[in-house]
Each structure stands twice: as structure tokens, then as C-alpha cells.
Length: 354
Image (cartoon, rainbow, N blue to C red; front, side):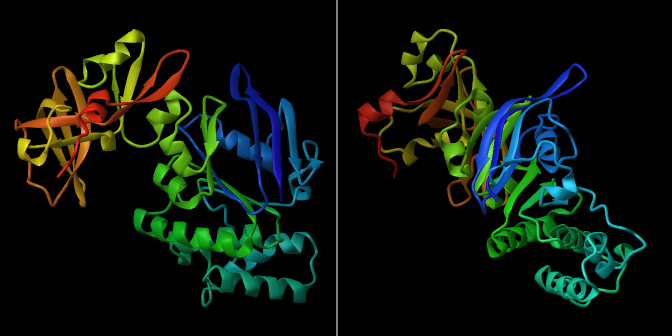
């Protein structure tokens, strides 16, 4: 199903939950709605589902305006955060429920339920009740129930929020494989960046009711279009006086400009780790945080604090160590514009790292 949304608006009393949102989704895509809590993600999803009525704008499914259609006539499947399974029904009963409401024949229901039990990896659990299942299994039942009536659009509201981290990781991969196999257009709400980046074809960043940016995870991370997107995706530090950083003196031409500096923009090490030092400056290690595969290091350069990563294969640093610091680039922004600035001295000195 191709989805198109034009000028979507929604208010709850004085609160503007969604503001003039426009987007389109190609058939078969898996889209992640990502943003902070209260940003408008779930409101958009519920309007697509027909559970909320827009105050303005159009929702178009496959060329047909559906604003006035009830949920059951929109060709959608909905997976809720809390599973919403019927406690008194078995796995089979939960999956079959919507089909019985639609008055499918018993033979067709039996065939469809068996197909979905196999698809979702629930074989052997058909006669169990929700309380006899793990969180991951209950969520698979919820997926199967949503897919049972053969919807053209699958909507998922934070589908993994109630599941522990290890199972959540497994279900992400399973969901991606299932969507690829079925080819069903899907939209899921999440506030977990890793989840959106790992699973989605494209991400829509929603903040204060606005669509800040839509694109592939790589496009959004590499080329953020707004300061909010730049600060929301990944770890970063906001620097007020970016012109004080060596190689970025030219930023003084924009007096009200700030910089967002990601950890991967910063390189640190002892003097012997750098072949050319002209683009680096002196810093000091303040804190180290072990991340399993690497260190997250907090460093101080003058009055500026930055964070960066350091490989476990390199010499271990300690709080208080004096080191050399190179900032490769920075994301600059002000009230009117935003852009990436490279370290000018690095370019001039033809910096080479050993």
C-alpha cells in the first residue's frame, strides 16, 4: 500500500500534537517514527489507523482518501505496545478472533491461523494461553493477530517496549525478516534510536508535532537538516564557543553560532600517536566509561568539554592524563542555518595518522 499524508494536524485542547505534517511511503517500505516522548509519533500512527480524527489534512491509502473510513475498513493491522491479547483465549483463539468477526469460513480461518503460527515461530504453542507464554512469544501472537486479516498496512506502536533487551534484539531481526518476506508496508513508533536504525528502511524524526527530517538512517546521521536532528541522533556535545577550538577560528564570523560535535569527530592520543601535530591541541582526560568494545572518553580542551571513542587496542588512558586532541569537523548551527565545517588546519597540514 502506498501511503500519502498531506498537511496533517491534530490538537488536544490547547495542545498542538501534530503540525502540518507531510510525507509519503512507498509500498513495501518499513518506516520508523522516531522522536522524544510526547513529540506526536503515536498521534500520527493513531490517525493513520483511524483511532483518532485529524483536525486538518488528508490521509491517502493507495490513492483513496480514508479520513472518514472506520479502522476496520482501512486495510490495516495494528500491534499495540502492551500486546492487548485476550487472556481467556489461546494462541489460536487470539489469532482467529478478527477473522471470526469478519465471518471467514471455519476452514479458511483454520488454514490462515496455521499459516501464521508457522510464520511467527509459534508452532507447538497453539493451545497455550497468554499467561503461559514469554513476553517475546506474546508479542509474536500480537503480530500474528494483526496480520491475520491480510492487511495492506501494518502499524506498530513501540512493539518491543515491554520486552527485555535480549529478546528485543532477537525480535528486531525477526521483524525485519518477516516484513521483507511479506512485502507489507509497515510503520512503527519507537524512541529507541538503535531500534530505528537497525530495522527501518527510512526514519521520520518527529519533534513537537513537526516532521524534522525523513530519510535513510545513514542520510539522517550523516547530513542532519536541523539542530534537533543533529542533537537527537547519536551522542554529541553542544559547544558554545566553537571558534576557540583549534582549526575552527573562522566560525567567529558567525557570532551567534553554536557547534554540535559527535564523538567520532574527535580524535585523541599521546604525542607519539600523531605524525603531524599542527592541527592538534592539548587536552586533558576527565573521565573514561567502559563500553565493552571501546572506551567513551570525556576530555577537556581549555574550557570546552568533548567526548570521543578510543579503541581497547590502544594504550589505556587515565583521568588527568595530558593528551593531544584533534577535532575533525563540527556541525554548526544558528537561528537561520546549519552546516558542516571541517578543521581548516587539518586540511592545510595534510594531517596523517599512524
